[in-house]
Image (cartoon, rainbow, N blue to C red):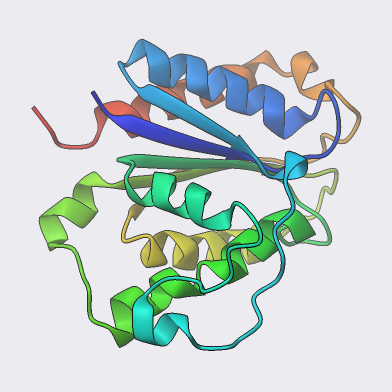
Amino acid sequence: MAKLVAIRTSFRPGSNSGLLLEAALEGARGAGADVHEFDLAKISIGPCRACDACARTGRCRFTDDPLMEIVDAAWGAGVLLIATPVYYMAAPAQLKCFIDRTQCLYNRKYTLKDRLPAEEVARRRGGVIAVCGSRIKEAFDGLDLTMKYLFDSFQMTFAGRLYVPHVDKPREIANHPEYIERARELGRRLVEDRGEG
């Protein structure tokens, strides 16, 4: 059974990214995933302090927040799925703090050369669901590049994305059943396409 770690980031009740994540997790559970959820809006994660301690250990030396619990869970998962709104064409602050604090994984891979075999990286899957109110066609470009390098640090293949523009009001995504179905399919596919069995 594939372990899937899901991270939601929106502070807003009835968030569109959260509703899409619920559909994706329905699809993932239907494909046999063991799902573990974390909500960044309910915890406090401090910023990276650029102390470079993780360049020697591969782990963040600060333990005043639950960051490493989430990082360890995601590292041990076969699938990592992140659902987020987009603010100013980028990751919101709560997600960006999480991403910056995974510098420890970057150092683990690139400084300490602690790398997984290529065939294992190919089976480890990362996916993202993102929603924004903008109609600008480049609205997700910044987030997409950031997520590419986040999954690289987790030594995962960036295997799926669902980007939904021009959806802004709470629960507005309910008016777009096609996106809900695409989210359900994304969750299923991330679990089933891992090349196991």
